[in-house]
Picture: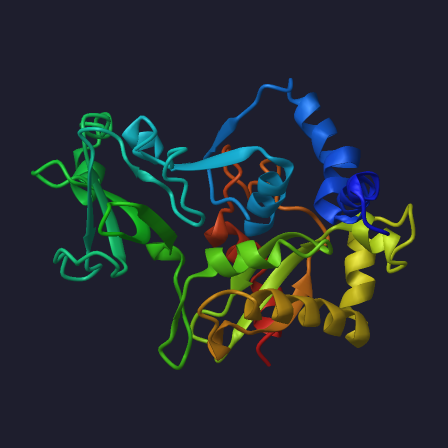
Length: 308
């Protein structure tokens, strides 16, 4: 455009319409904020880790997510991100009077900031024990009042807590490498083809995955017919090497895009499940956490078939 005040305003307007952020604001993001009432500034998330893709989405929309952490035994919140210190990937600083300690899983020796270990919590919100179950209480609550959360994580010098996985969920490959499945699963859930995923591979040479496909996404891609049941779709695709290769390719990309990627993080075997993991079939808890031990037991044959 030629110079001048009028043409300058036109160029500014044109740049605004050509900018994807501005276009998204006009067509989508503003409507999403309006649907929440138009006054929503912060949302506290909890109950499980939130996928990175969702954090990206709400950040673009303009709704700030403040991740939190806690358990039923801690009534239930111990940490939360603050508006003035909202660090992505973290679970926030502790509540007042709440203490965090990271210890070695074997020796229970306290570890310095930045080093991963078991997360112990002490504070006024921590329970005094399980009702009429002193044996269970002794396993997770020591005489000094430190509660063993069973989670793995680390803290920053400023006491920001970062949860990295569950101690009992750790997958140990046959080469001795420890894999925390939750972060890898969260990364894979960014794929539109995947509704649910559970990593497997204990004592094996490589990781495998049980996947519940996202049926609407498969229909949109032409991989499934609109009325085809999930069980039939999964059974058919499991017999199709090209379809499985497409799933693997997408998982490889999601995993390699994570910071700190290692070759052992690769998922080399896949089996598609014919039913969702749900509360009704006993494979999810009431808070929608995967019951890994029950999933492993139910699909033992399918898991073994991943490792010929």
